[in-house]
Length: 277
Image 1: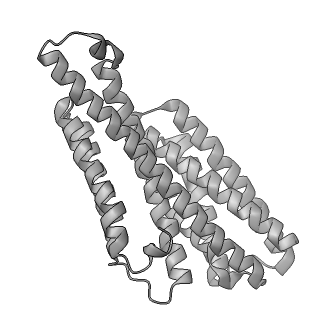
Image 2: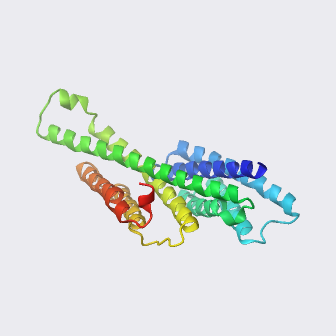
Image 3: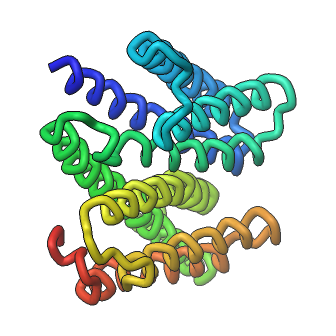
């Protein structure tokens, strides 16, 4: 019972950490101080929980817990989080903070959901099953964000066409102004991309643990990375090259077509994803 409770706290830590990474990504793209501050305090909660678990492990083993691979992974994550908190507070290097925490999340997820470290097989199997649930949920939420972003881009294109052709009427008035449509499409992509990335990390861990013949070149895995690449290029065009308006809306529509291809086609070509579709 105690081990299951601790396992639940580990899962809570992972979820808080995932939310922190998401907010750091938002701050990284938009220089949003509110998101940065919230991400910092969420990460501080993760650090406190990790420190407590580390101390409890020290009491349990009577030594500093770094002698095994999984103890080393846990301590490594603790060090990364500690450094990122210091960097965020003192140096204010947002690029480093975000990518440091992506690495930290990956290692902590590996530590938490790998069954070999858990003495109870019941707890281990429960964690692996819940890892799959979290992976699928985050993937579907990211697809939902991309879908809404696509809808806003479609409305942008329609509104742009109506304005260009000077077709005034009730339909024009019911659609939001172009700036708001563009902004909402962008914000939803900012939410969707890191959520899909975290889902990919958790899904890869699940497949590595659960499947005897997991292959990185599986079509669904490749398709998911193509989706991330498509939206990363969207951010590059928008933020680095300053492309906006109808051109960026069209690219966002094209990126969503990649999402549909990945979901409906690559999912069917996958060696293992058809189990959960």
